[in-house]
Amino acid sequence: MSESIIANKTYAFALETIKAYKYLVTDKKEFVLSKQLLRPGTSIGANVNQALSAQSTKDFIYKLSITLKESRETQCWLNLLKDSSFTDSEIFNTPNSSCNEIIKILNSIILTTKERFFEKTKINS
Image (cartoon, rainbow, N blue to C red; front, side, top):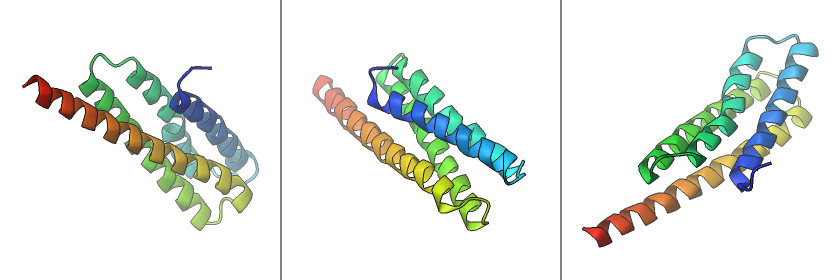
């Protein structure tokens, strides 16, 4: 595993998403919405890893912003699956809680990085 907390959390979330996908396909025979959940749910960790390899602060912020969008999309699909009764609370609660936590962490990282970047830019101007 990575030394990055967000990388570890998003990797674990991808595994949760895969588990939910398998449940939806196997037990619920749901093939469309489950695929919609799988794509952004697993791309969050990949995007975080891209951000960790960013070439600049602006690139880092940009890549994490994309990751935040994917996280919000995943949250949308999770809510839709719950509200349409494809998932029960046991299958919904863990990934939903993890997704909310990831969104909060990403928001915090982006905000802090922007503040530091703009502060540094002002000082150097």
